[in-house]
Length: 356
Image (cartoon, rainbow, N blue to C red; front, side, top):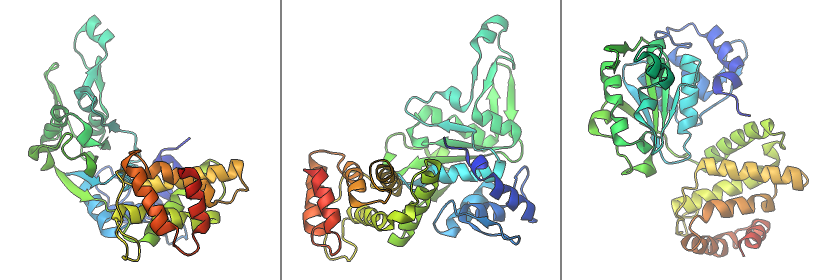
């Protein structure tokens, strides 16, 4: 349903590789300049258009790419919905041509997921051996000179996190059961993501944090930038689901983004009215989800055009996470802001209908 980045954008990566005559670090598929172009978009000399994968300050992308060209690992930090996973995947796809060497961090992630495990049938039959060893994605990346990824690093238990210290500092992974070690091949590096809201869950130790260069991915700076991001992603998702084109509902996309930004910032766009913020993050990713669901409603139960009634329920679900406190915040926003806003009567009626 969702191809990996290296498959979905294979033509762009191929065109970039053909046009890329700049120096490439060991085992990189593209030069750092080409990787940054792949993420931020551009037009190649042969006319090939590279679509933007990340809409944001170019300097952030350049720092992230440059970090991967050094011996320091990269930590992408930000609030939920700032495209950390998306950027991580596309960086790995552009650098190594493979974004699948992934460890998904959870509260139950074991040390074996970071280091290595064992084929217990082989282990019991023949004892510890390389044939019985099951390499983790990080071990594979080290031995092949590839880019590995760790998602939600701060969700991983602290003792498992710290197993990364030797890997990142010494570039080796000891296997004491065999009296051996795996040494990282040039080209190996690690991209980790972490959520600002998870501070205090499993805070990174100072020793581990020193092994990373941290790049903070901000929320979109302007409403227009956020509308552009939502429109692009909804269009990409919609094409894969045979939904109507996103530009058909640009008015509703702008309204969804406006609502999310105002409640997230605690103030209306004109700065005149202070607002209470709900408990949810109201991220760009959630706006994309609301609009995509609205397009599906419009396609299957409407006339194919995105209208207020198609997004109203999605907005309510995104805003009201705490039924008691958030519902009060939402009702107050509807009555004091949305109701009085010119040209928003149809949106107000649709939201009132699903809120009662």
